[in-house]
Length: 213
Length: 176
Image (cartoon, rainbow over all chains, first blue to last red; front, side, top):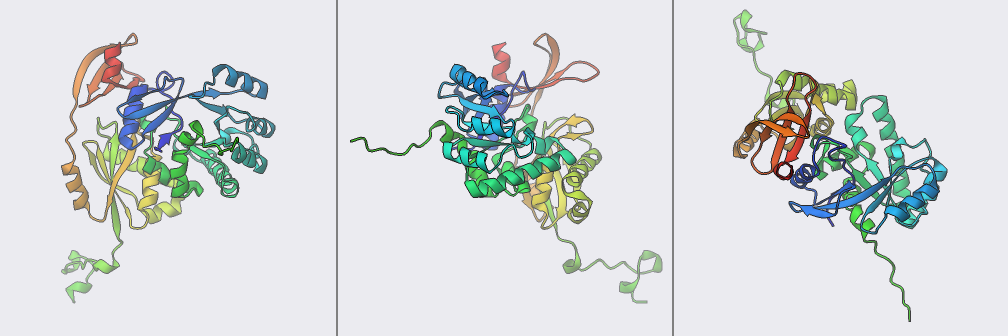
């Protein structure tokens, strides 16, 4: 189990090549990194985990996209929407993670969604980029949303992932820095360490042993 | 008049320093600057640090933390704060994204109670080396390349306004 940044966006979305970002992430202490659209592989001892980001408002379209693009080794990340959409997505097979919760409407992720996420082993992604990039009211709102998310997490214990969503090597933060940053919204260091390793459990879930005969 | 009680040298006495037990305890943070070159102006870095601490923790907390940039150069910055607030100062340093419109990142490396310990640590670190390669063509534009030991290469677009900065590796350039 290794510390993993759950999403970064290299060139051309950002100003740093995938190799450079992987190299810098490795120096910071990450052993794996999730890159949407990348090919699986390894560079300077850091594993590259490919991902697809599904940004739809209709659940049927999400299902279609998973059928078309999901292949078991690719992490499927779905952008959060309103409450109904999120509940439907959290029951979908093949979804690994729901992201951009902070951008969804208020109450889009409630106790029912939290329970569904826990039951189906779907992680909720915490995007750290707005905490670094934004200031003022917007950052306060995001901190409030993450506080609320942590309240639900302490009750339902659904999996969490942490992503820097870095578009540049300058936006990357080390696991130790992330542990400190997460204390801003009440996430303790143990939970942060667990969240940094969640990606591995999402890709190889431990299923219950069944006696067949 | 007892020289110890006088308020300044103007009265003929020596100003007595505050006893060590009454002084504010400090902590010193060593932070790595990325990209390491060119060095940011210490005064501009100080204002950027102050701005990021204030925006994250507010004026009252910043007054208690008292963040000060002591020095910066050769890819490192030394920042002082009040003891007990070093963790919050480190968090605020992580949220710093630019100094005078130039994008940079600060990565806290070590915290110490003495400046000397951090200066020794800087002395033990490998010296920052890089070579300038110019001009270099990348995706149809002309760049100046800054090549660091190992794989890292930074490309700075040639021009006067809004020069693009790209972070690549030697492997990326060889693939072109």
